[in-house]
Image (cartoon, rainbow, N blue to C red; front, side):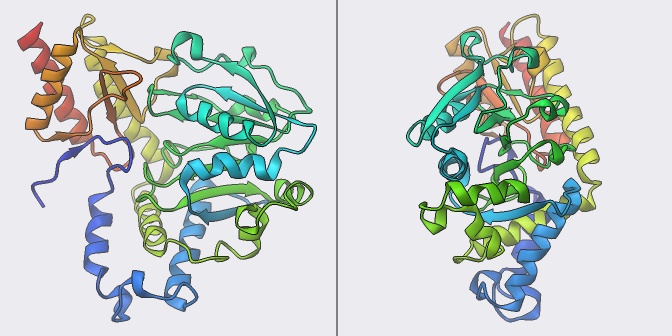
Amino acid sequence: MTNRMHNFNAGPAALPAEVLRKAAAELEDYNGTGMSIMEHSHRGESYETVHYEAIATAKRLLGISDAYDILLLQGGASLQFAMVPYNLLAQGKKANYILTGSWSEKAKKEADHLGETYSGASGKDNHYSRVPDFDTIRTDATDAYIHLTSNNTIYGTAWQDFTRVSEWEAPVIADMSSDIFSRPLPVENFDLIYAGAQKNIGPSGVTLVIISKTLLEKTAAIAGDVPAILRYRTHAEKTSLYNTPPTFAVYMLKNTLQWIEANGGLQAMDARNREKAGRLYDAIDESDGFYRGHAHPSSRSNMNVTFTLPTEELTERFLEGAKNKGFSGLNGHRSVGGCRASIYNAVPLESCEALRDFMVAFQKKHQ
């Protein structure tokens, strides 16, 4: 296929070409069954094989021990904003939300409807241009849980290291929707991780949840009156087959995870993502201020590169010119403005190099 766009959309985002071709080849006849995987019963052997392969591959890639369960849910990260406090925010406790952008704000706002919360740190005063320094984050052993967002798509910032979160005494919860499976991850330092698939690991429609069995047991006393569909224990006990799962999204998740595994795993993804981001950050840093990165260098994301141009007029010209050259999804979020290149796992290095070349040429023409 030669007419593929350079896809920099923030999500739903680029999928690996090999995964798309595999899905196309199997769309009408999955594995010789004479039916699409979308047509198979979620109680049948064909789909169940896909379902459990997806879970097994995720465990292998992240090195997840038997101390954790993997759940395949629906509703995206937005539903998790509610499920987390429904299951973990006990009366008389406070949930601690570390604010690093719009998505962590939304997560806290949802929890505010269900109980008491506070913010142990916030980057709002610096317009979320950097992740708070670890030593400035206030936590307490009595916190119901501590919630962080690992990568901030709108602002282009990310946590660089998760080693010290193991020092926190309360359960640690992370929204990793936009960078999970992009780099190695110390899962053992977290009690619950959730991620909408539509950035790095598949299309929209399925949400991956990794939850420790110890934490899962604790939810029993808190979520007893919560509707069954909103309890983590419900889905763990039914191996994510309590209700009809998004079967095609799970199939695509499985194929995408196997693509990551076949292409060197998380170490290889990390090296490749750093190289891709480096091309774009070099173009920004070497532009003498023509391009200005929103994120402080110490907090730069390798998934979302955000930058502005000197004027709104130049920004519009840049985006129009980029569109004419076959680039898609470069508009910045309305709260930040400017431009954003989302360069998840499936975005090839060649697309980042093409964008870098366009940025250099545009600057020479308009500076």
